Length: 303
Image (cartoon, rainbow, N blue to C red; front, side, top):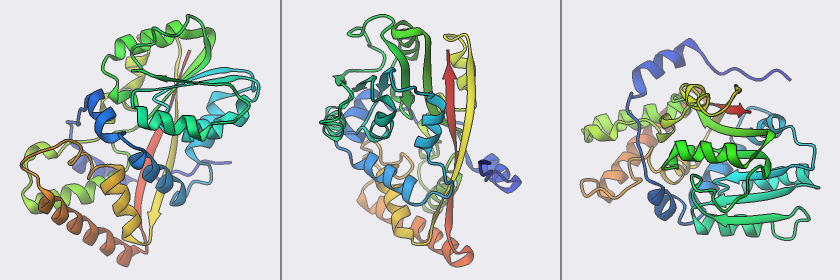
């Protein structure tokens, strides 16, 4: 099947104009205590990414193809979240094992419940991805880190530990975005902020800029002999503003603007921000028939 290509010169031009050079940075504690204090953020993202996608192959399909599982592998999932991805991978590991690690107890418990009763042995560990000291050397055939590496405090220690626990013929599977992924969401967000005269420090890109599809190969090649990048695209299309607004507000914390408490930004600020964003999305739907959010994402396969 030929993968769809949503990249256009118009989107490239828009990205050059819209996406800032600076990106947000959040601590592991913020991720644990705010973003993933429950499964709400993950639930919204997973629902929207699947319900509104236009690529027939889901991101999980892309991951399964890249992992090349035979069914007997021992797999470690760093930042396993609520177990959504592991639930889909589990039938491909019928005679293998799963170890899920996450720093946030609430989502880790959700993963445990999601896979409860399956025949594939599952182990759950509450820890940070840069401290794998509880795991033995050469213990895993596959190690995954999907859309979470930007939260890890010490990337050097994390990747060094991944090499230690991964077997000689193993594979490290790291998934992240390009800096201009979901460009249209950032466009309406920044446009609304400008209309409101918002503080300059809110005009930042996604935290995934810390290790993105653009800079990830250079970083990972310091730790792994072979680093291959495989890209994947999708376009979410909304004909009603409300699902997008949930995605924007809950799934992405108003493009990170509400990720941490800020005494300058009260509820009235975010209420006005949402109304301005909603109006732009509704206008696009009226004009084109849908509001598009283009995803430029992919995976590094490291050996």
